[in-house]
Length: 626
Image 1 (cartoon, rainbow, N blue to C red):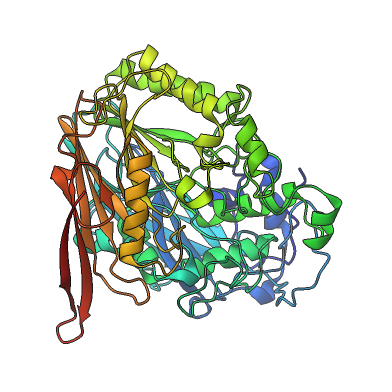
Image 2 (cartoon, rainbow, N blue to C red):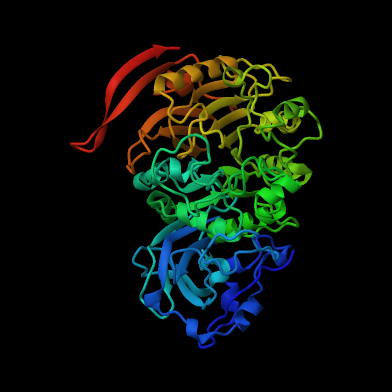
């Protein structure tokens, strides 16, 4: 893989040490073992154009601050310090690729150096600064700055801020938190779990609410942070006037940078990044719809797709997407001999291990591409099919065993797609009734996972999932091999919590009514023995409060995402007792606010906005015994 092409020049009047450039992690490759995917710092330093030196008055922190991938002694800090709000297009190519079509982008060839200073303190007034430093950035990395703040104490809250070097011009103050040491006896940790934020379909209110409540310690994002479509191409009908830039399907490095920048304009997303450290993974839309190892639903390495999509190959598009994601997200490099590895794990004291999978980009066998659904149905039980490839599978099973061996109370597994069976024949007919783009299309891989858990007596497993734009809560069971009593949960090996989208539309219709959505939910809980609660109607998120004795999950729905607002509805609460390996009965205490709750009551409630006092109140109340 050739180096990113570097255009423009740097100012000779600024004293530039290569070490200061190297502190900006974004110049490196996303993979330590593939340096060719990075930017050659020595070439950047050699460039010389004094006319493009930027003063503080020409620079702005355009997209807030962020932190992520916390360790016990360090955390990643991020900002963007730029002389322009828009992403720079002067080197929007990877591996010598130049688009065959003209997007009429404004190309900025002069790319002077920008210096950012950072400091980290134990207090908001920065009276006790524990570490500081500076790093350079330029258009080569879209003026993003990503540094590792080191020398920190475990499980400690810190505040951080960036300034323009030699100036008082400063960014917002961010807050972050390190993780505990692996053996620390932490009593409780809170997580907010998200997926699927689609910019033109609604405001990202869900991101801001845990920050306003200050209710969690860390944010987990399971993917679909952005969508790659042109405005109006997603097929569900746009609901608000928010156009994701550039206004076209994205392919180039510039395209992906600009799309990420557009999403980061949302104030609630900025607030979440500013308030909590994030641990994210990508799903498919960070690259393209229904990606797998070799292609996606649109690009299939055929001559027709190559010509229709402007001469972009599958690999080129994926590299563009990965490079931009690495630049814009507060994540670390991964030590591995594969340039797309994002799967990794975090030990949160003796409380739990967080195992973040990549079931999309790394080494996934062919998936449902819409025109081949029946074929994937036919091969869905093939033993050679994998959601993650053999290398990641072995790492996954070893991680589960190591977690149990070290005595961690819980294993929390981040999966992009829903793990449990979802029989959806009510919507899709009886020919191909399952979701073959999820784990249902890779049943042998799922069985190997369940076999490892059951055979090794590894309990307290919590699967957290995204992608589906709906909420699902299930006992984690191997129906084909182990007896299971859905009334008591006996036979389960854990629990799956799958969350709805931040703003992406309901898969059963963007404008579906609450009553129609709940009717579908009732059919789904009847058709799937292990599925205990399901909701299609609400966009939102869920929080996990993890303790040694029990784990609690609380689901929140947004009354509306057509406007920016801080309101939310507590839809259902669930408890898993340590050692029980199932949802506590009665599930959700026997009552939920929406959807369908097996053997419980759903209060189908309509909420109306009171403009006089800016609150939401119940305008209609029905109790339905399911």
